[in-house]
Each structure stands twice: as C-alpha cells, then as structure tokens.
Amino acid sequence: TVAILAQAILAQTIVSQVDCFLPFGVSDTTIMPRATVCVATAALIGTAFSNSLVEVNFSPQGQPVEYIETHGHATYTVISQTYYSQGLPLAPGQMIFSNPKRTPIPKPSGNFYVLGVVGDIVKDGPDGEMVPAPLSEVYDHHWIVEDLYHTNELCEYGPNYIFGIGAESRTTPLFFPKGTGYSVADGVEWGGNIHLLRTDSGTTLAGDDPWLAAKECDECYFDASGSKGSKCTLDNNGTFDCCGEGCYNDYCACPTKQGIDMTPVTYFLRYTMNYTYDVSAITPVSVGVITTPNCLAFYGVYRDDSSPESLSTTSFPVPEDGEILLGQGHLHTGAINMSMFVNDVYVCSSYPTYGQQEGVAGDELGHLVTISPCYTADDHDGQGYLVKKGDTIRLDAYYWVGSFDPRIAPTPGGTHLNVMAYMYMAYKGVADATVSASIPPLQCQRALRNSCKSDIGNEDGCLRCAHQFDHELAAGNCSSVDVSNACKHMLPVGYAAPAPSAWQSELVV
Picture 1: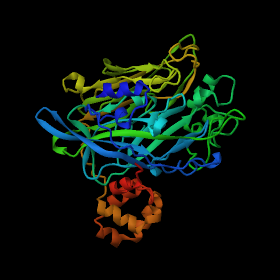
Picture 2 (picture 1 turned 180 degrees about the vertical axis):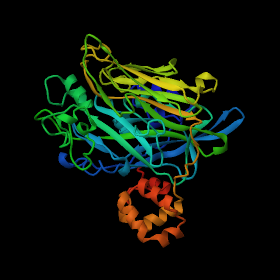
Picture 3 (picture 1 turned 90 degrees about the vertical axis):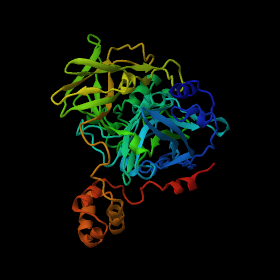
C-alpha cells in the first residue's frame, strides 16, 4: 500500500528493494532478486558523465509481480515492475539534464494501460543494498517521461510529459483513479528527462553560507565562474541554461570549494510502474498539464517583505465538455499552495509539506518533500469533476517571498528562481484517450529505420531521405502522414529502448 511504501522510505532504514517498492496495493514481503546495471565511474572528473548525459538506459529489476484488482464489475491483472537507470556518477556540484531524445525509457510491448508510477533517486548502501539518496545530497529537480507521440492539449506550448515529478517524488506516488489508466499503443517510444544536482548540503559548494549555496545551485542561479557552461549568462539567470540544459557532452557544475574531494558518487533513478494488458476493463484517460503563469515551464518570485505572499494566476477556457478525474500539483521550495477553480468556484488545493530532519531521505530539512493531491475521483465515489464547454478553469499558486521562511530555515527565504506551479491532470471527454492515430505502424517504422538509419532523429534530414525511398516505404505501409510523424518523433538509431530479453541479459544479480 501507499502507507507501507511511505513508512519504509521515511524510516530511513536499510531495507531491501522490495521493502521500498512494494507493488501498489499489495502487502507482499517476498524478497525479489536484486539486479542493477553496473556502470564504471570515470576516474577523471572532466569525463565523469560526458557520455551518459546524452544517453541514459534503464533495466528492470527482477521479475514483475502480478495481482488482481476489481473495480465495479471489471476484474483485471495488475503487473508491477521496478526499473533502474544506469549508474549516474556525479562529482560534488555536478549537474545532469538528460535529453529525452537520447534517453530511451523501456516499456512493455503491445497495447497496455499505465495505472500508477512512483520513483526516487537511490545509491549503493551497506551490504550492497540500494538506499534513498537525500535531496540535500543530490537534488531531484525533476524526472519526467515523454510519450514521443503525445501532445499536451491543455497547454499547447507548455510542459509535455505523461508522468513524472520532482523533489516530492519519493513520497508522492501517482495513481490514476481505479478502473482508469493511460493508454499506450504498441510502437510508441518513450524518452526521459532526468535533472539532478549534487549539492552535499552546500558543504562542498563555494561560498561562506552552505544553505545559500545549495539554494542557489538548486534554483539555477547565474554564476560568473563559468562552471555552469557557456549558456549560463546573466540574462539566463534562473533558467535551465544555468542548471545543465545543453550540457549533454560537457561537464557543468555549481562552483565548489578549493581542495575538496571530487570523487563522484553513483546514483540511480529507480521507478516502479503498474500496468495492465486487460484493456477492456480499463477506462482510458487523457493526460495533460496546465501551469501558471501562462503555461510557462518555470518562473521567478522575488523578495517582498511588505507583501510576502506572491500570487500567480492563469485562466484556461474549456474547449468542450469533460470530466476531471485527477489533479496533482507540482511546486518548488517556497510554495504555500496551489488551487483550482471552475467558474470562480473553488474545487481543490495541493499543499506542500517541508522536511524537518537534516540529511534524512523523505524528510530533508529545508526541502519540499511531499505534495498532496488536489483532486482524485477515488475520493468522490469514483466521480470526476464535470466541466462544460465555455467554462473557465483558474489556477492560483502562492509562494512565500518574505526574507525569513520558518518552514525551510536555515535555507534563506526571499527570492526563489526557477519555481514551478503545475497541475497534472487526467481527464475524459476532450479527446479520444485510446491509441493515437498519429503513431506510424511498426512495419513503417522498421522500413524507415532500414532506409534512413543515419537520419533518424534529424527531422529535416529524415524527410529528405524518405523521399529517396518512396518504394521501400510504400512496401512498409507508410503513408505520407506516417513518414512525417515518424521523422518528427522517432528516437535516433542507437537510442531505441532495448527489447525485454535484452534487458534481462544486461542484469547483474
């Protein structure tokens, strides 16, 4: 259960991987074999992560666990599988920001429904067991999974992911309401964006105040030393350019003290996904994200002791009748809450919880560690919140910008850069939530890979190549629309997620 999962993590005990990640809804104490991908850490700091920034691969841990779930008159088999990324070696101050187009995320074959996801950042602990890595040691800014054929219909130019979360990930699982799920079609490819920063509670970072140094590293502040990369300029203060985006082949880091031990520590992204092949028993949902202000990926809030509650508000017109089944807020340190309204009528709020213990994973002092769900149909007898065409959904987000914030002290309050105010939503009625018609047939994808191997991943080059192989692509049942969509979304050759049999062969038990 969620309670058991949270207790195991918050207790900060040395537990088995199964203890930390029980299949959702199952009280199973069986110890599954531990399996991880072993990746050698580079000896020289300058090359410690130069290649892995581009490509991060995942492997499953052990065999999946199955159990039966019943919802109404429907019964379906839930499959629960835990995955580990390859090792991510980070030196003090170092940051990573993986490219979704170069970070394939494995998924089951065939057509299935995602039912729930939970994940966190871990490292090797005593006796070879994986243990949670505290946010104060390595900050989990976010990890998200993109369906390369999915479009966020709620904010067309906003964040576009199907699941994922930030610092609260360890204690904030994502569950779609019972009997519902996100439909995944055979042939879809997933890519991941993993954003981590190693701060070591600021003790290894340059500056006299370790709490301030860690805050400025986590919040993407500009630094004149140049260690964050050439794109981190004063004009880009508070943006991802000062947090590792674009450093795919370079070493980017928050500045560190002279003379410290720069030995990297290897971290892993661990996530567990619940899914089912019993597609007839599940109601498909669409997913999307609305953000304030104005569908932006991030923004800044600035110190104001006279008016310390900073409000961002954005309204969204409802294009057609629908039903909101899930609303989950995502916020950063300094947040007070975020609320959703329909036609100015209050619907729900998500509230953050801040940690109280220094260095304790799941309860890290000075860090946002949990965010409550805003709305879920499971709390309303399975009923979603109904909206009509022409309604207005409003999102309000409050951050505290007073100089002193007792919730996060001794981390300084005041200005917070690169903050977020997202409402992740699962809904029905806006669009067909089952298999997308834009996904090219697998036969077409294979034909395009065989004909244009070196151009996959370069949309313009792929399209030019495709015109030279019209006959071969036609034999692969490729329409012009299929070719256009495949060239836009397919992962480059060499970055396709491995087949299940290949995952197993890579495991070290």
